[in-house]
Amino acid sequence: MSGAVSLTVRRAQSGTTEPEWVRYTLIAVALLFMLLFLVLPLAAVFAEALRKGAAAYLEALKEPDAWAAIRLTLFTAALAVPLNLLFGVAAAWAIAKYEFTGKAFWTTLVDLPFSVSPVVAGLIYVLMFGAQGWFGPWLQAHDIKIIFAVPGIVLATVFVTFPFIARELIPLMQAQGNDEEQAAIVLGASGWQTFWHVTLPNIKWGLIYGVILCNARAMGEFGAVSVVSGHIRGQTNTMPLHVEILYNEYQSAAAFAVASLLALLALVTLVIKSTVEWYHARDSKDAADLPPENPNPQAALA
Amino acid sequence: MTLFALSKKHKAARVLPGFGITLGFTLTYLSLIVLIPLSALLFKTFSLTWEQFIEAVTGPRVMASYRLTFGASFLAASVNVVFGLLVAWVLVRYNFFGKKVVDALVDLPFALPTAVAGISLTALLAGNGWLGQYLEPMGIQLAFNPNGVAIALIFIGLPFVVRTVQPVLEDAEKELEEAATCLGATRWQTFARVIFPSIAPALLTGFAMAFARAIGEYGSVIFIAGNMPMVSEITPLIIISKLEQYDYAGATAVAVVMLVISFVLLLLINALQAWQRRFSGAAV
Image 1 (cartoon, rainbow over the protein chains, first blue to last red):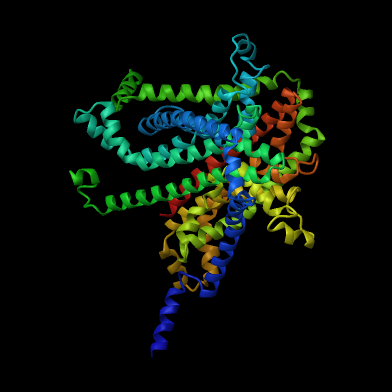
Image 2: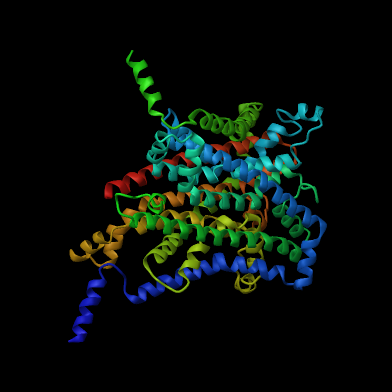
């Protein structure tokens, strides 16, 4: 009797899922793939970094050139991320809130830096500001260095991280529409108040998400920065470039020590990203659970 | 008259302030950072005659690099389609211990700097590495040759496929699968005839994104490739080595070829995404 019941239940379930052995095989293969391609490389970074012991690890990080590379990386990200944040918010506001001709075209152009090879991204700034570039002679006459100097590194980083925040915000703001902002304006709020009190709370998770990804790429960019940097030790080497130099000089443990900092940054990025996604899902669920006549959680609390 | 009325109506529809300043800033910034520098690339190419341009972009070393870059990128994107679909499927359909961690880990290639990925994969696969020490005696060499290029590109491209397929699988309606089963389909038939067609556009988009990213990839590849001319030299590296020989025009010519290809791929991806949206819209 009970056997017949369980058989029926199993038949009913089998319509929308697979037999147990198929499920476990698929999970096992997927996890094995992830282990080989993602977990092992990550683990190898830390294992190689600590191969010569903790003392050698700390020594490699305290070395003046490594320290200079860390400072330059932080400085570059501190400039590139706010610039692209400002652009991302402005672009999303213009594109999501209004209709204008050529909108689809401009939106595509915002994505362009993603599909350009990092090496090409570096090259275009060399052609603009390098010794033989458009502004090369003028810059030399005025003793301004952009290529093989810090400004070039910042420019190349801004280019490769250009779309990150804009592309998170544009679809989000398009989905939310203009109703709430229009209501705020009609009730007498200024444009700035509307943005600050109405739009920003609605887009905050997307904003944080974009900033985190933008920051991770800004600190980790290699190809574009490598073309414009000139690799001057202690001056124009970012952390990824410093890793390359150490690695090519067969200082493997030191290279992996600096690389382990970048790997930690990646892990922190992933943790923050997952947390943001969790909060975002919770907020949208709360909003969906509210009675339909009062769909705004802020309004419900007030 | 009607035109005037229309434009007036259009203006009146803009209740929200800030259109002029945000659009102005957006276009200025876009021009300064992206458009003007990219146009420098095109202008520099015009300093070459047509014959010189063709010679620069079809030299034997350059041709070998195209074959490697496109071949390895195609292979890597194909592997990513298979395993990306598998990972997305397992994450959406099944429950297992540590699923949240695995889900977060999928984005590792986005977050991990490419140079770090490059040296780490090399350390794993080189003759004395964790995996290389077992593979090399068996005659399998995965580092310092085209195999290494493909492996680095698989690492880089994985999240693209998973992250485009995952949301589509999550939104898929179970009712359709139940209906297929009620009508007598086996589970495999349901997958092949009901589920797969609904995720095919997303898979194709993921493939195109992984492929586009792989073609331009530099940081993770150069450490593991070995960079032997004619054998394991990728196209971005050709640009770098031309630059190091102060052959700016030659580097620019190759860069223009890559730029045109990435632009075509970008348009293709946009078209695919539009198709995918229509597709899922029509299904509902």
